[in-house]
Image (cartoon, rainbow, N blue to C red):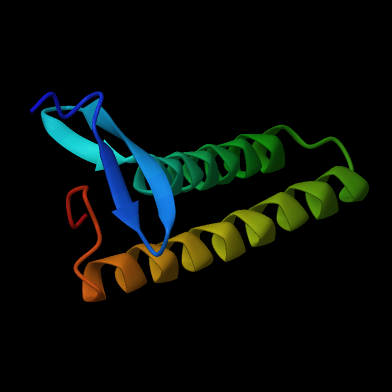
Length: 94
């Protein structure tokens, strides 16, 4: 079976399986990893922005960016945990 071209059928929805770092992953799981990566990038941007801020309004902006990054990360981790608990997670556990 060629896993790269295979389909995983769950809940009546087809997920294309992707290969990532030696692991075959469902597209939805790959997207959760992308969201976690994006949250990490937003946190780094908030850190850099606060260090370079010239006024209070910039500091407020980067505080909002950080808050949103934490919310995104938290929700993505919950979703990954839900997939793990159901035995549906095709990625690593970290």
